Image 1 (cartoon, helix red, strand yellow):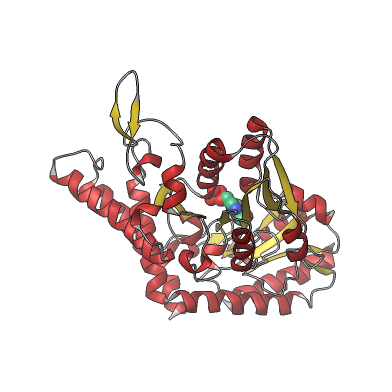
Image 2: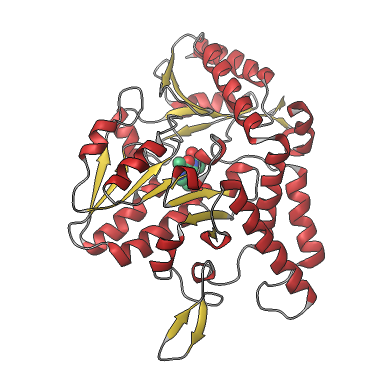
Length: 402
Ligand code: 7TS
């Protein structure tokens, strides 16, 4: 069945530098299947118009599709209410929204924000911005040499001043799947809410926000086969209700006078301006695409590719994996013969193989690991063992050249 879906990704059927493309940069962004592209195309060709404001039919249809997309997301992550789903541009905007508004409401001088050593810049910088404004501090959970959270150290970071924990579900560098459920339980024992950065986690595990009991969960559509520019912030009603608006503008208001404005109900309070309706419809199609295959099957496929790749890659001379966690998602970082990762990436590109190199927007993690960067391969539904064989052959050639 998974072989069949490859035909839905026409972008993969091309040559790069005279070689058939092998796309292994899925942690950065996945390709989009025809069903997603068609859903977006169809929206613009048939019902494009602005939402929530028109009396006319197209606007009503667009509004219905947009709100249906919200319900699809709600079911996908098993949120209790559809109005706990806020559409954003992506993970980055979702985290910025929470940092700015939760921070404005609840942080004061000397308060503490717990994050980990393996965070993406998107889950560091927004917290630094608000921390600077109010005089709060970041506390960093250390990681082991395998690339796992040090749980005991995490427990010891809590104090009377801790206001929030913001932690990645899955590291985009190490591939580590963090024990977020346990970490949330620990935080809740201290009455501290938890934001989970699910940019990578959303496709690595079946996410059930009620079972996790996370207070916020953020992810981007473009990493799960949906278009760029659409993402999700899930937040528990009790927090979203208390948080002030993020941006001001149309859609998020109830009544505006020059003296005072009252704000719209959830989730519209956080969706100022014309939203990305086409993107939301594309995200709905992407979720349905994944569900038609089955999340369990998709995860098992990615896991088996990751294990196969690790085993085959370990045979390449000079291979050093960065990240050896017990629970690993389909992300593999490595350094080959201590060479610069960019050289490996460029040579692979010449052979038609697309990977990511560099610090992966996790510079503090690079400092902890004392490396300049890594080369990284990451898998998705359309990748195959044959492609991994091509990767390994290419790495063997490169290893000899270095
Ligand atoms: N958090 C994590 C863990 C990520 O991996 C990324 C993107 C983000 C946040 C930000 O997501 P965005 O969609 O808002 O940009 N990670 C990567 C990556 O690893 N390579 O390119 C983007």
